[in-house]
Length: 285
Image (cartoon, rainbow, N blue to C red; front, side, top):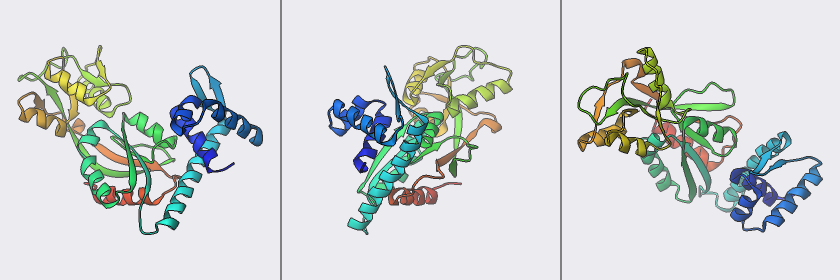
């Protein structure tokens, strides 16, 4: 067993299949399958359940995967420090809300990348629940989310308050009882705020129109498909171009808290340590 073995298991988990790992690592699928089988024999345990749709980690596999992430990160960070003690390099995987990727994060990423150009950045957008799961599963070093998380496994750094508003293509205040609401899928903080606000008014969204992307929601609102609750910073550029109108939300629903989360047991390598410094310094709380 060597570092390549750990990288192989990580690749299988993150691609979801042995074939995906083979393609990513440049090996034959049969070679990967044989190495996994050999590893399971050596450890006298089963790491993966095989299914028609790919592979799933067993309980023992989850423990192995967790250790593999830590071992690979520690090994690569150690090698980088010994080879280039004055240079910060390595991988940094950050999850984020789509809105934060367009408003809060760009200046932070720019400042960080200019200071540490050898770090390989990977930014992935998604709803909060997906981002939280990726952090908990060691698939992301950390993530920007729009809510407070009550879990003993995660550290949380408050970043900024994000203002929300209702957007519509019409110049008159929308009738909340009859308007079509454009929302993200379940698990998104913007949808949660929308539902809580309407519930406080005695209104339920009976037939919401669901989207996966913020850009699609904004374009559809501009086209008159319906109304939506979105970040005010995103809406402002559309208002300036006379494409949309914005309407204030009640005070208790007007803002959400942006936080940066990461696992408490996460190995803090130098790229991640420096990122935490930058994002903390740029915090607007």
